[in-house]
Amino acid sequence: MSYQYFTAEGLKKLHEELAQLRTVERPRISQQIAEARDKGDLSENAEYDAAKDAQGLLELRISKLEDIVANARLLDESKVDSSRALVLSKVRIRNKANKSEMTYLLVAENEADLKLGKISVTSPIGKGLLGKKVGEIAEISVPSGTMQFEVMEISRA
Image 1 (cartoon, rainbow, N blue to C red):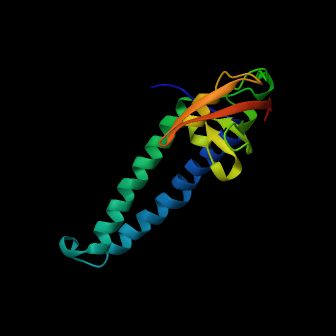
Image 2 (cartoon, one colour; image 1 turned 135 degrees about the horizontal axis):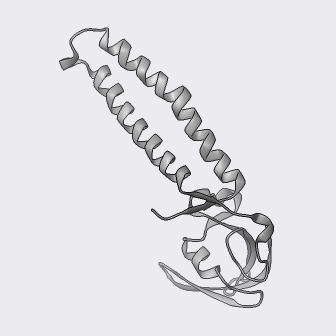
Image 3 (tube, rainbow, N blue to C red; image 1 turned 180 degrees about the horizontal axis):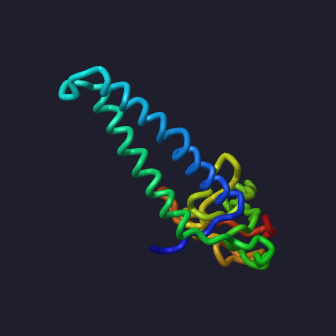
């Protein structure tokens, strides 16, 4: 199993989701199964089957989250090098074709949220920006061809 890197905020969210699934969702589904079981014949009980399916999916999600948390590594934000675009770098880039500027925070895959300007280092743009310095051009392959972005500024998150 490879390690996954998280910010303190990202790891906290994972722990909160895991706690929610264990303490709220698991008992709720167990209650649904008990109520469906009380209705009699299980061989033709759609409610029971649906609750058992939901329980299986929930247990799978809990298991995956436990595995992720067990192999999680916390990124030390104070040690992020701002001379190059790395995980936890805030990078302002300019599209060479249309001169539009965007700012992204490069994050681990599980913390990506485009609405918040957080892109994964495994995304095409994230991969293209990794290791770049201010003034360098990132050539990023997209379905319509290759886009060029100039790195304008790099700062810590």
